[in-house]
Image (cartoon, rainbow, N blue to C red; front, side, top):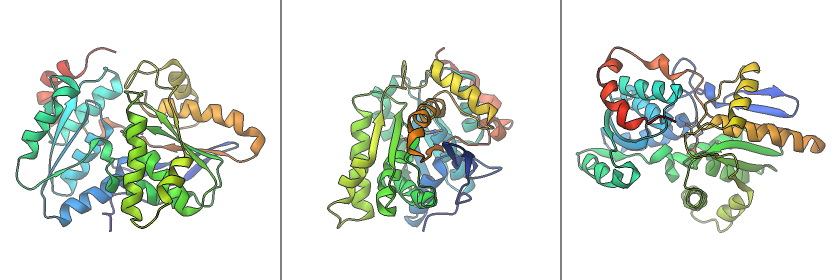
Length: 320
Ligand SMILES: Cc1ncc(COP(=O)(O)O)c(C=O)c1O
């Protein structure tokens, strides 16, 4: 049984052609967003195996690393992470400060992704350690989104749209949609590079997760892959670089009470709005799955955040 870290089911709001699945509210007053469902499985597994330390990785402003640090500490784990540089934005700076405020041991990846395996290996050598994949997107973490699809069984959208970074959200929803017999396709809006690798890894994640969910099925992975559409044209200059379309979508979403970020959700929301215009003729709504925490990172700051940030910022946050 996954640990009850959040409040589920989350609401579906919105009107007209665009529905919004509010995973931003997965933990009201705490840290929400799409990491909650994944970590519910991952932390339960670490606990069941008697481990007391979590080691993970991500970009400097990773919501996943913040969520792991937050829930890990809350559930009694030590947390360590290797962080890779990403372009500086206000949101990224706040997220990094909030991560440091959780007391996580942060190792900056000084040689980009190339040096990460070596730095991870030394962290993983510590006793009692559970490795948590980038974005929580191992097959086990992805199960959180396989389960989540059951929550939209009554909505009948033509398409579900979400941001696709490490792939677990889209992969899990595609599998869950098959298991629930939903008629929708699942559109993962690519926000991470390289463009030639991440879609491939995501499809592999579908296959690996389908095997975990139903080892005997010969069709689950194939059916889920048919449902999964990977959209590559919202990425812009690359991971972490805001786009003009995303910025404009952020303003429109704010007017509807939805807060977006430039790395993930702005790009997905911009695409969802376009799909609403195209789907108008089908009379079925588009469902945008909102994956950003509704509590902003600065809600998790305390005095500890102030000490080591200056040292850690400079190499991790080159200007955008
Ligand atoms: C706010 C937000 N939305 C979407 C995603 C992408 O989800 P996934 O990594 O499961 O593809 C992330 C991943 O870090 C995220 O932080």
